Amino acid sequence: MAKPAGKVPDHLRSEISLRVHPQDWLATARKLKKAADLLLINFETEQVKFNEEFEEDCDTDLPRPDDTVVTMLLGFAVENLLKGLLVSTLEHVEGVKDLSELPAELRRHELKPIACVVKPQLHIEFSREELDLLDALTYVILWYGRYPSARNMDGLIPLYWNPLSSPTGFAPGDDAHGHYHFKKFFFNYPADYLATLKLYDRLETILQNQAPNGQPAGPAGPAGGSS
Image (spheres, rainbow, N blue to C red):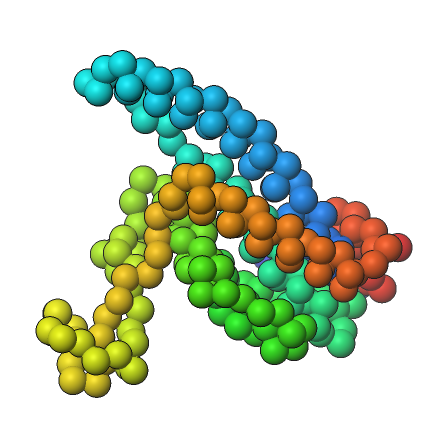
């Protein structure tokens, strides 16, 4: 019986592995950050022009500059740093053939759960502001930066359940044991960008120290890891 189309032949499967070493995540983060920096320059130029025209005429037809793609790329860069840090805590990342062999957080885009995993293992502290920024970046990564709509209303309006709060009034879905709160899902320019860039720089430095002198693997790294 013929093998299903698209399956990697066994003789190749034994020779190649996925690019999941910490330095691979670091290299990709840096490429994404570079792209985000270039787009941010263009966005800021458009923002200055918009502000000048708005001051002259608040009814200007000039469209408001869109920063969603810039934010998405920055979010992907932070995501790669966090995943690289998570991988750096693992004992073995050699010869990985499927991400299912690694922690589930590596197969998802939610950033805060990854931060919660690496925090105790690498003794990384995240401020309340930084955790909120991770929520906002997740929102953009999941859909806002690349699709016109979320998959459903829960994705459109991100909420979290706080069982420790004491609501003064009940909203739909509340009960006496907790309260729903909005997650942060919009970026404020320039404050949130500056805070995210600071977070990126800090995580990049930590990951660089976790993967010193490492070289990213090729398109299909050898089963034994990076050469």
